Image (cartoon, rainbow, N blue to C red):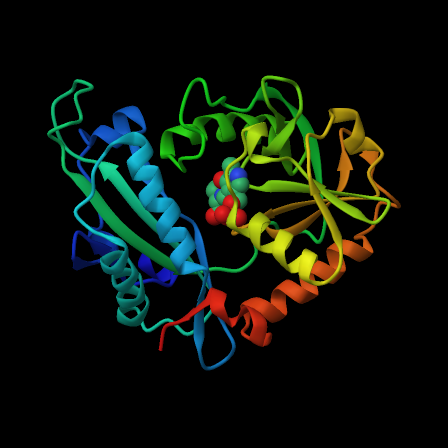
Length: 305
Ligand code: PY5
């Protein structure tokens, strides 16, 4: 198992365990009821140094997710920061990575009272390349609506929320698409299954606001800042489904997806059907930033070695 993934150790409640021994019991509450929260973080190698992208912000969101669910956790921001850095060192990683901190309600009785259950914390990290194999993808507007804030605290990045994403993703894949975009319960554009969405119209970048029920994506937030600094116009406002079809450019943004151009929605060609100039510009800028080549944004990089 470990050979394929390229990782040897997982951090579990303050200790390192061998990859193959990072297991939980079948009566783990999170397995039964989706009672976990997690983060998805990337680390980028410039050949010699490894930089974790916006580690502080990911840890802050992780702790917010814990708070939103009231799970409690034995580790604070500083301990989690060193747990993550130690995990990368212990594995002797020098290449681009994906890091998955995970906190879940552990082993216990069959019921829903999670109060006495320990919050188990894991840090998983592995070499990682592209989330989407293609240069640009084809998506569908899902028949499933995005979970609403009236049902769950949607600002939490919780494992249970991803049944909604898996349903949308499976539906899309089974119909021959690469991914889906979900509308919210008001019928406005919300986000992808694991990505935020951005649209370009007449030179302006438009992206749904937090009030549309999106995850407060760190890539989205970074790109809004970077685009603004580069003198580009960015606005956060609700997007109608029909606006997607006539956009000049569309792309998904997220830790795993990075900046992924969307070339078709529901079979309609977006722009000229090719990767657009804005996506190209932002991708180049973003790559320079995460590799530590732009002084101004070094503040977002946490060196490991
Ligand atoms: N929206 C959802 C539903 C997400 O799951 C993600 C991240 C984002 C937006 C983008 O947020 P950020 O820019 O902070 O990553 N999704 C996970 C990721 O690591 C992957 C889940 C499969 O990209």
